[in-house]
Picture 1 (cartoon, rainbow, N blue to C red):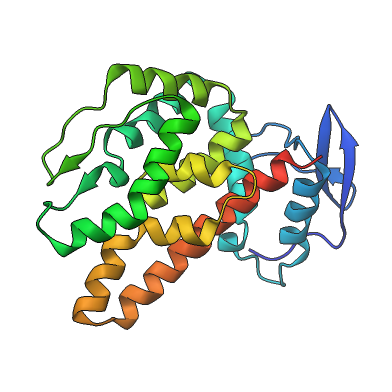
Picture 2 (picture 1 turned 180 degrees about the vertical axis):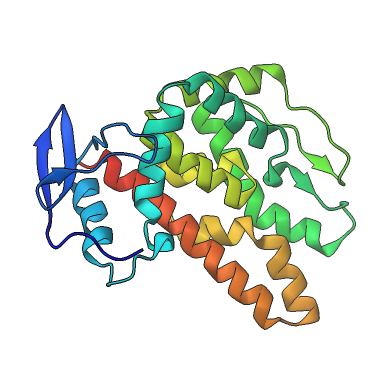
Length: 232
């Protein structure tokens, strides 16, 4: 598709901020008014539009896609979004360890355990650790506490969390990435610990490295989206 606008700006309105193309406010993919919670996020979305060339690249609208998902999918049915996110807690990668006699287990304990134990202390819950790949359910009290925490998030934070948790295969890492001052590079390393372990043992493949770098950029973009949405 060809570029169909010349100017991009941001304006306040309808209880938030809107990106405008040639003076006309943008709507979401679902047809809703795209009202954003902060000027910082609106400016960032405006930057995506302004950065397009003569041919539109849909893949460049990373932040817009999350904003539209927040407004079109999460806002109308936050309970469904919460249930979908809780599924990542049931299979949280931080809880599934190698057998205790394996070297990988010690590395997981070094990197994952401080993150998991810190989350338990901060959020007042307890996770079940599992050695091996056989699924074991998390305590109902833990899931209930996490559900309450998720219910307190706004649709934009939940949209970011959907990407963060999905990319990391961990609700814990996703929630930690939303914390102020979070070390997102360290969290992404934790999410890829097993892949990094295998790569160090057997060598690195260009295709795998490229895929991991692309997914890492998506993780950082989701964390940036959440930060921008929460900016005053």
